[in-house]
Amino acid sequence: MGVAHGDRDLEEFLRRAGLGEADIALDDPCLVEWRGGPHEWP
Image (cartoon, rainbow, N blue to C red; front, side, top):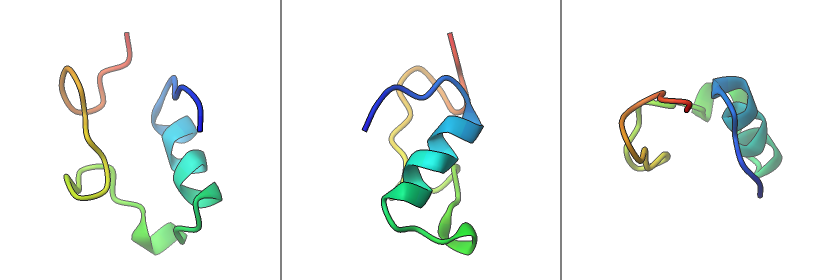
């Protein structure tokens, strides 16, 4: 879908994928695979 540069970008990608606000949990490993560590934005 693209490259997220922050939590807000990632939340927007998830919303566009059909997830509702209540379903978006950035700390849920079933939903988000973090590479480098949670919420790290180089």
